[in-house]
Length: 341
Image (cartoon, rainbow, N blue to C red):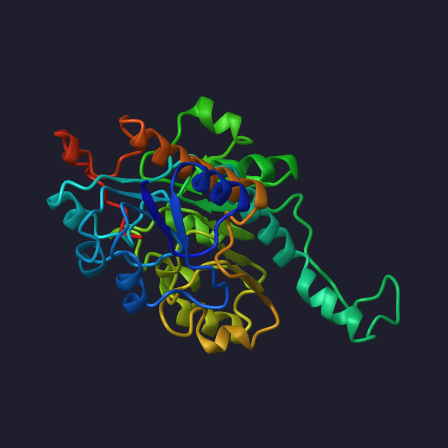
């Protein structure tokens, strides 16, 4: 019987289906990630590796599984898998469609945007601390959205989803994208208007960072750009941490040069030690911090897990999995992918 290794818990519906078609070994700890030494030992007799959670499938791990036939990732890019090395061993690596979680991440981005503008975590703490003594006072104030300008950096699937939600809240939308949308497309997104990055940072009341992490976008949101923001402006990042200079952002927030920030992604993330923002950002009450959970809706994670199971089922049926990340193992042209994380 085919043996499948799963390196951390996945939705019950997916693990149940896998157990119907294969012998499944699951590392079931939720309090930590599996170490590489444990992983090397666990994969020794496995035929298929389920990949997720930034658990690195290095050359060492791949070599530890001499009977390995497939790596199925619950991820769009699976950069934590050594895909070039898997290709040298003719092992297919498959992932998820890049459109798979876009709507969920756009919804989460807008939720984080609203929570930051309305200071919802602070409001919760304010009430729990018994500080609510007046109505219609200035003791606790948030920022409304309607009539404000939202600047979207990266007008792809996620950015467009954020734009739709912003338009429904009567916000004015400006955006930056390498290739601007057509006038017809801009009309769909609330009459969005293209801007240079500098103009976008100067004009926006709220800025949403949504592009993919590439060599071009790494460090894109620099101290120079942050210095252009209005003192009442808010920065939201649900893309990738290395796009934003965290230290520059902290300085701007601490000095009161901008009003707030909502962050779901960071320069340091799992599986690195001490994942999360730099310490100074944790001290600031006007920063909303979440643990990279832009796709962490139960329904979406179920769909992601089952799509990964479907890829495994197709492979076991002798069919090509969907979304093969190294098509060269099937004699096709390798994917030219500029995304680095």
